[in-house]
Length: 211
Image 1 (cartoon, rainbow, N blue to C red):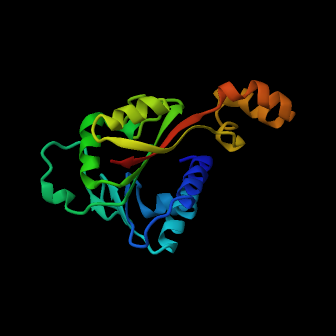
Image 2: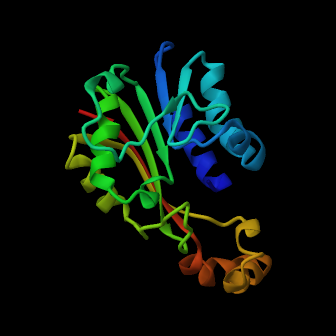
Image 3: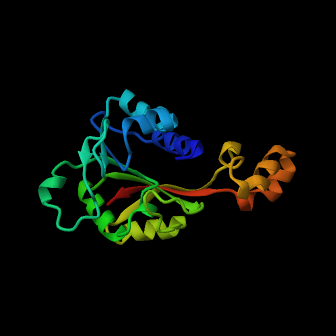
């Protein structure tokens, strides 16, 4: 997850009047080390502020690891109803949909954790190269494509959305294909503003409310 993406999520969550007993499910959150050491901004900007409010967060991943509460493959068919006995007020699903081969099944199962009024935070790369983990289907939706897809399985209201451009230099400098981006980011502001904007990585970010 990009740092700017985590900041965007933090800002959006800060403007929501959550109830004190909010139950949170983070899907595909990986293990504790990943979200606190490899990418500590995930914990600092997303999880810690929610925990500070007294929320309970369940972390779901496909593999058992330290810091994973629910081990579950959401692309499985015929998961029993008992799997989804807990319903959540907030579901976070960031940078996962491009890594599942059966998005439709995944979304159908994911939404079985929701109830009317559940908030659903979903992010997916919009402009970004292939990155297998272990696969990348190259699903790169616009905001409308993503919201339409989710809405086809559960009627949802868009609370907040953004085609978020990533401007932080660290995400470009080490990639030979993005040297131009890095040089432009170091140049005068007017030059960067006019020339780099179409070249930036982008993330489709949406917060939806299940109706």
